[in-house]
Amino acid sequence: MQEAINTPVSEGGFVVIFGGSGDLAHRKLLPALARLRAQNLLPEKFAVVGVGRSDLDDQSFRERAGASEIHDSLYYCRSGYDEEGVKILDARLAELSARLGIPHNVLYYLSVPPDTFPVIVASLSHTGLTRQHQDGRGWSRVIIEKPFGRDLKSAQELNRSILEHLAEHQIYRIDHYLGKEGVQNLLVFRFANPIFEPIWSARNIDNIQITASETLGVEGRGGYYESAGLLRDMIQNHLMQVLCLTCMEPPASLSPDDVRNEKVKVLKALRPLSLSGEDLDVVRGQYSGGKIDGKAVPGYREEPDVPETSNTETFVALRLFIDNFRWAGVPIYLRSGKRMSGRGTQIAVTFKEGPHILFNALPGVEPPRNRLIFQIQPEEGILLELGTKMPGQALRIQRTTMNFAWHEAFQESPEAYERLLLDAWRGDATLFVRSDECELSWSFLQPVIDKWSTTTGKSKIALYPAGSDGPDAAQGLIARDNHAWVPHA
Image 1: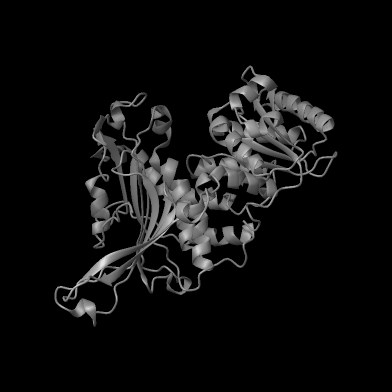
Image 2: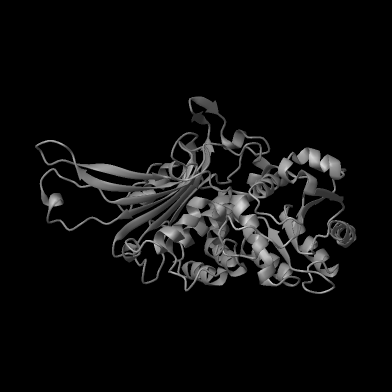
C-alpha cells in the first residue's frame, strides 16, 4: 500500500499458479496479469507457470488462456501437488530460469481446494522451494485463497500446519474485497481528510450499516453452498474486513503490520453476540421462489444439489457493538444476502441529530440526518446526504445528495486481483489477512455456527421471497433501535 500502483516492478521472477487450468486462473488471475503487463508494471524477466493435472502443454495452456499480453510468458507443468509433483515443478523452474535468465523469485498462488493447502505447502517446503536466499534462490511467497477454514478449529489447524513450513511474512491470505478501490479509499477518506476524522466516533455517529446484496442465487453452486452458507461465504471474511477498515484507529504508519495491528484491535473489542431472547443479534434467512426483474426464479431448496429440507442460510443480518472508547454504544449492522431486491455493496454512516433548538424545533420541520455512503460495488463512489432549504416562501427542508462517482473523475480503476497480485509481488502484505485476524474473526462468529448446528438451531430459519429485502426478522432486528435499513444508493 505504500507504493503506487503505477510503479513498475523491476525484480524478475515467476508466478506459479497451482490449479492453473482452473476457473479462477483463467477468469481472474491470468487476465489480471495480462493487464499488468499491458501497463508495463511487470518485470521484463517474468514468466507464469500453471501447475495442474490436466493434460496440457505450453501451447494448449496459452491457447486456453487467451491472455495476449502475456501469451509468450505462459508455461505449463503437468504434475500433482505432492512432493513428487513438486519435484517436477522444481525441475521445470530450474530449466526456465537457466534458459530465460529469470531470477529464482517465486510467487506461488494456491488456486485449489482448501484441503490441498497443507499438502502443497509441505511439499514446497520439503523440496526446498520455499527456502529463501539459499541455493541461489531469491524470495518466495505463497498466496492462499479463501476459505481460510470453515470454523475456528479448522482455521487454527490450517494456520498451524502452514506456519510449520512458512514464516508469516511469506503467507498472503487473499480477500479480493480488500483489493477494491472503494474499500481501499476508506483509509484515505478517513485519515487524509482532517475534516472527517474528528467526527468519526460515537460522539457524532448514530449507526453504521454495511450491506452486501446480490440479485443472483447460488448459480449452480448448490453443493458448495450447502457446505458453506452465507455466514462463511461473505460475513466472516469480506464484511468483517470492511468493518475493521471502517472502524479502526489511525495506524502509526502505513506499514503492513501497523495497519493490520489496528484491524486486530477492532476484532478484539467486539462484544459477544446475543443469540437468544429479545436481544437477539443475529438473523438468518433462506430465499424462496419469487421474481427478479419481473422474471420468476426458483427458491434455494429448488436449486440443483440442494436438499428439500435444507436449512442453509442465504441471508444473514448482524447487530454488533465495538466496546472501545471511540465506538461505545454505536450499533453497527451487517447484512448480506442472495436473491435480494438490489445488487451492491455499501457502507452507510448515519450521523446524530443536531440539538432541538433551531429548525427541528419548528412544527412540521424535520431536517434529514446527515449520512455518508461509501459505494464499493457495482459503482464506486461516495455520497454525502445533507438537508437543504427547498425554494419558496415556506421553510421546507429536503434531503440533497452530493455524489462523487469514480468513473466520472478517474480513468478505469485497477481490478482487485491486479492490485493484490502486484502488492504480493512487491512484498506488501497490507491488504492481506494475517493469521491472528483470521482466527479472531472466526472466534467472534463461532458461537453462531455452534448455535445453528444444534437441532433447535436448524429448525428456525426464516424464508424470504426472492426479490425482497430479506426476512421480516431482519427489519425487526434494526427497528428495535428505531432504525431502518438504508436502501441502495
